[in-house]
Image 1 (cartoon, rainbow, N blue to C red):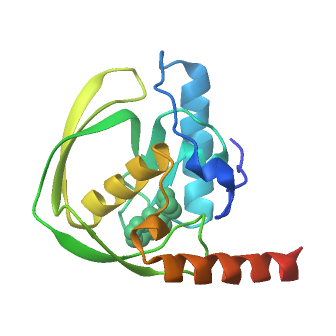
Image 2: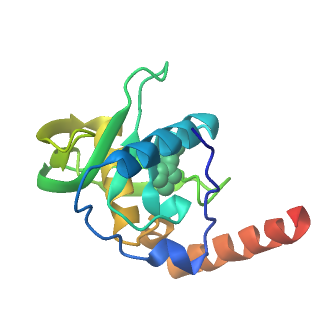
Length: 167
Ligand code: GNR
Ligand code: NI
C-alpha cells in the first residue's frame, strides 16, 4: 500500500475527464487499496482517482464513523436521482474551504466492484452527497464550481496565498 499525493485546486489536472476502466485487474485493485489508505489518512469520506492524478473512473467512499464500510466503485453511473438536499461540502483538493451545495437527496448507482461484477446501490443523505461529489471529480468538476464566480476567485486567491506560505 502507498499514500498518494492529492492534487490541489486550482490544478488544471482536476478538470480532466476520467476514462472508463476496461478491465478490473490487479492494477485497479492496487489503485483502490492505495486510494483507500490515502482517504483514511487524510482523513476524508471519499476520494476520486482524478484527485490522485489517475484519470480512470475509480472512486472510494467510506461515510462510516469507524472506517468500517469501504465502498469501491469502478465505472460508477447514477441511474436515477430524486429529491433535493443542501450539504456543507468540503474537498481534500480544496483544503480548508467549506460551502453549501444543493444535490439530489437520493441516488441509485450502478458500478463494478473490485471483482469486476456489476452491482447497484441505493443511497441517501451524506452517502448520496459523497457519491455525487466523487462522480463530479471523474467528470473534471470540483464542488467550488457550484459556487458564485466571486467565491471561486476568492478561494483561488486564498489557496494560492497558502501555497506560497507552505512552499
Ligand atoms: O472528505 C470529504 N468530505 C465531504 C464532506 C461533505 C461533502 C463531500 C465530501 S467529500 C470529501 C473528500 C473528497 O474531497 N472527495 O472527493
Ligand atoms: Ni472532493
